[in-house]
Image (cartoon, rainbow, N blue to C red; front, side):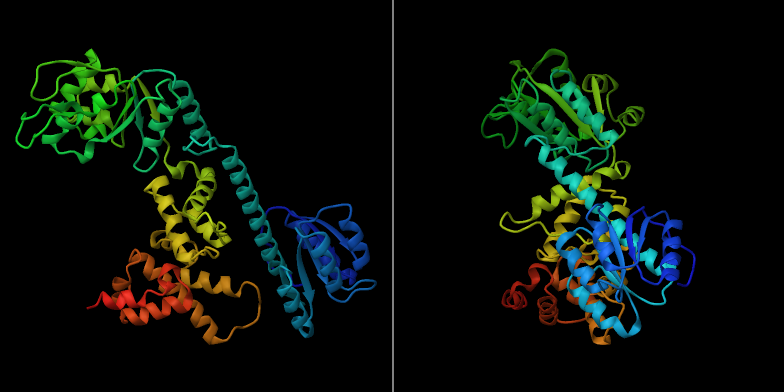
Length: 484
């Protein structure tokens, strides 16, 4: 075996079956140097006996051996040790047999003479796949143990602290400020505080302060009498009154105008407010939870937020970490979103290892919300089949370690070392490129066709040919009608 620089991978339990003792010991040495645990044997029958007393991650077997040949050993292993991956070691004249074995479930094959890098690369892929499978199994187990109302998911130290704080704070009526970047799940925290509190049978009312104009914010929060201002044709109760006995969630509280801040402060101090158009005070019993992605102390220094109101709404603060600081939670969240966005009558689509790598490498400036959208995007474009890198949104593909067309080609060719026909490679490239441009256009076919310089009919035909998402379902007629 040619010795090059040995790669590294997670340690595996390997059964090496090779009747050529010199070659077997050379391969064994290379594998042990890389940190793997290796058992070397010289014939298929002894190898099969070893698998009865020990579970191996991988078996590397020669084809021609005494007592039991490598292909017979492979078929026995498929039946009796289905979790063990098998790599066939063969000569040039036996490649066809090895390829046939791959079609029956062998992981890969090596043509002698091969370098240590070649075998270590294949073993590193097996190790990565097994590590991913463990992550997915742990994620599924964690999801199955979640209570239906436990909508904020995470096993990282930061999220464990948040969940512990929620459990403690939920039994209190203390005003709570939830902070964190956009998309981290601040409203989910507010809902969990309510759902776990003695107020859970009463209303949970959410208000996005950033979506209200300055002229309407007071009327929205505190209500108004009929005729109190132009357009007030009937009396309306505000959100504070609607939340009486329950929880009022003020999202993006930093966006409240100064007049509304002053009135909110009075409500929190006295427990009463006056609707617009009346001097009659209304008493309410409301637990306030506020949230913001802004730095409120900075807003106070800039004169944009009242310091006395800050201390009223921030009796207890719960800070949510960004997704990039909790990478261990990505798999758990992705599994949850895969289940959410897959039709109930269809199985959850598998995710290719390269796609998982791309998802993990991305930094997610939009946090959990962006990951949710990315998974939904991938589920739609994959059409229920395995999700590859080319099914992911453009920003995630762009940050992937491998360029999208190259990734697609390597995925298509991963099962074989054979040179593929040019037409097959071009089809693989074209499908990946179409999916990439579609994702950049947010699924808009007209924009995609314009970018590619082809007609929408030609685009639709190609989408149908390659089975890319819902576009392949037969909507050409509707598309053509859009042009008239």
